Image 1 (cartoon, rainbow over the protein chains, first blue to last red):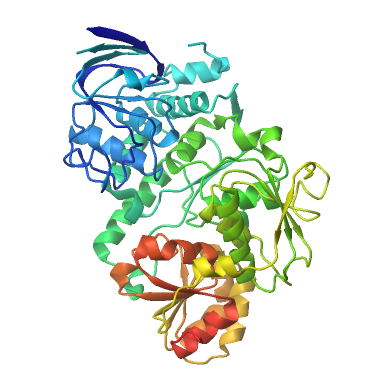
Image 2: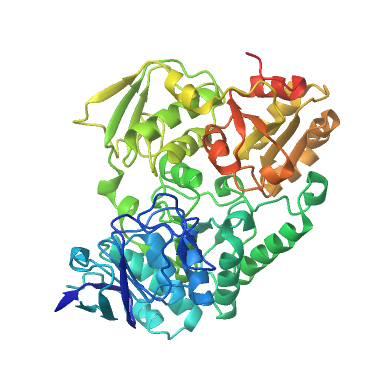
Length: 130
Length: 406
């Protein structure tokens, strides 16, 4: 089956990848190891999972504004997500996606996406296949 | 999705890259944030205050980004100033900072300088030449300066983040949303403060209580007993902005918009504050031995430095004393003979940095006494320090005896 979703573009771009979905907000400074792309925040529902190359789906961001620079560093190191999809974006992750050039869409009904789905992001249009 | 954000022709051209990739990136950030905030348009800003300066917080990722953005030709179009760095950029060696850290810290300040940002290295731009007027629009990060600019001065800024304030400095604009708009500046919570306020520590304890109660909103305070003599309101707003996401407060008859009748607390049910005990409970720990006494968060004024020199009276110190301030204020204190009087006791007047952003644990300190509610609020989690909190006289006593009087 496939589902088409529409969102609002934060950083335009094209990307494909396997979805990694979190029900909890994600903070990048101290929450994700920029060298490996692994979520290291204790107790987070993605703890131990690697976000690199995945279409990372979560409700919203959290934490220090310096977290924007963590996303930038991940983009430079090749450990960043292929794309980011949020329900409602906030400034930290949005700025990180812009400066890192990571395609990002928000105002998406993320309950339609499950971990393991094949997801294609093209500007404001999202195709989910499972 | 309907596009509601209106851009001028110039803004659209910058976004399309007509003024180069550095300007384009700044406009892309400002525009994306304006969409997130639901702004109708952008507002030109008079100045920017940029946080994210200490290499301890910024890290290699932040440094590389600043260098890359500078290499793309991005330059600030409005007066832009910097928050404190992670070390005193002149006296670092005597204070025990590592040379490897200083090299990275210098590279950060140099990258900002290339971006056209003045290396003021203070959290109190309003004490060092950037004094906004009533109604002016700003893009300031640094939460304590945001509350001061909005509340005491009546200027208008949201609580910008470091990257967004830098983008606003380069684009010369920010989203016209939140505290830039009249409606967001109206009080949302009313407090009758009925207990006396005797010291700057009392103001800080009050600020912590109000910030944690209001969380997001605009507190309006009625002070039954007024302010303590010589009160400096920077400590009150710094505390509110630490325990809550407060960007603006009003004090009836005193702060910029609450003395002219621009804002009034009509229709709000007042809460009474009869004691500051719960504020002190949050801030004051249990350490008996004190390694370090920290004064100057937000950065100390010349008047505060004079008070400290007078209180020390040349006595020798058991615990280290660091008075943190802005470089031009330190220079003034040197000329006034205050720094030499504090140094004769063994205390230090440190510029460019503060103990919230310096790598304090690496300097070997374990316990700290301070009269700053913001410092006391952050030190346990940021630096792993055990903290005592009280007014200046008790902090001076602690630096002389090395103990916190029970």
